[in-house]
Length: 242
Image (cartoon, rainbow, N blue to C red; front, top):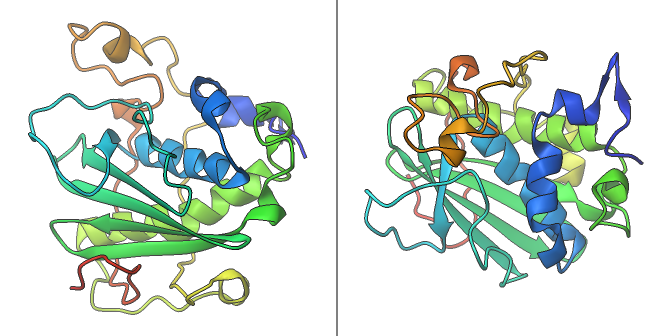
């Protein structure tokens, strides 16, 4: 039940570089356990090469600045979270929505240009403790929830973005079927993050905009995963259908 639990020879903080920093940048504004899970989804999107462009569904000036941090007011609506992202690789737009339903949180990622989605559903009490504002105690199994989000949302969208397997249908695993509120599709493979990133350059671009092409505090562009794709059918309410 610890954010710092050992993972092999690495602690969770070491394996998920800069997660603690991100968590502590916004935990005082948490209103619920659901907020803690949205922070993980945001963290993984940034790690996969996305930059946050604000909250809400309305896209402002595409030239506006982006960030690795969550936007002001990101959790004001506790029933529906909506956060916008732009790919640092190709400027494609993404919309992350998280719908609260009792003890579940349905998370859906939409590629706006391709109109493709990747979704998963999380049992909140299974992953988050009552001490959800304390990073060292917030998660009952941080590795499990990160692996689930990687497997069922991040890597699925990356395969979609790469254009591979977009005509296929991903069957939900038995575990995903039990947890999924709307029987959202899942996939079999997750993302392997580098366990020894070059920490010296991380964060320099956020702190100093003139610092060349280095990554931000979370994303190191030299270690971006190669996108793999997908053709999901289920879409969260209110999102456009392919």
